[in-house]
Length: 299
Ligand SMILES: Cc1ncc(COP(=O)(O)O)c(C=O)c1O
Image 1: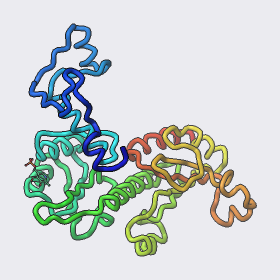
Image 2 (image 1 turned 45 degrees about the vertical axis):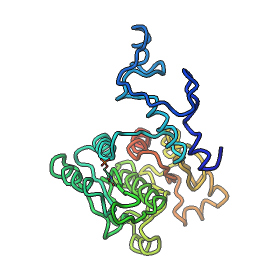
Image 3 (image 1 turned 30 degrees about the horizontal axis):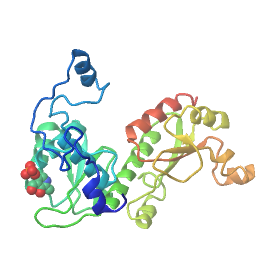
Image 4 (image 1 turned 135 degrees about the horizontal axis):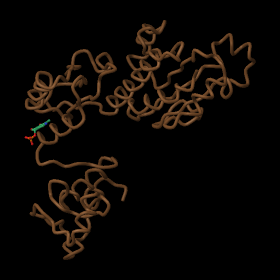
């Protein structure tokens, strides 16, 4: 079932097990009976699959969600009763006071109005990146990038893959900022940091994207310190690839640059306390928590 139009017909849809109905029945019910107290408790605890109340899940909606996830190549989808319900749930579910959201306009009028309220009532900073571009508008506090495609009513498409790549770069920048402020870290090498000596050149060359790799040197510049940190990491896997969707970490002096003499390594700044990260697409807060824990062993 590889073709889009075949998946559009079949994904998430099966003959109804109760009646054999080919068309997905519309389950017009709020509540579902669950038989016994024990079965009800297990469904509410999430231990047994089953329906209980349509606000949580409904078989007709579940069929739509499974179909949309399949068509979008996503692990899951969530359907709402209206566009505004979807927008409010995503924004209020994921943002906290002090967070930033960057958007590329033009936006649907209702969305723009709600964004204003986010700023005025909920302390969420809303940044209009339409003129400046996303690359120049993302900061370590950016928690969400909002894009509507095609736009309403001007029907302008946005390059979602490009937006996703820039949003990932923001995650890398957050990790680099965290490392730069950590007392066990002597220096961070990341051209996206304003304090990097060639930041201006990198900005010109790389057009605002700075890649997913970050290197840093420990204050205690010894292999044993690097090993102590690396061996404590749990989300970062020790491996030498430049990048993947999952985060990797390596010790160049003992791996990629072990074939180079110690003198050349020293000359090129490949110190014993240097660690290289390839930052993946995990949430930066989780990556930072992993690094924070591991860096306690750097002393
Ligand atoms: C881009 C966009 N977002 C949100 C909405 C709001 O959707 P609804 O009217 O279903 O709440 C619309 C409606 O046209 C829209 O075009």
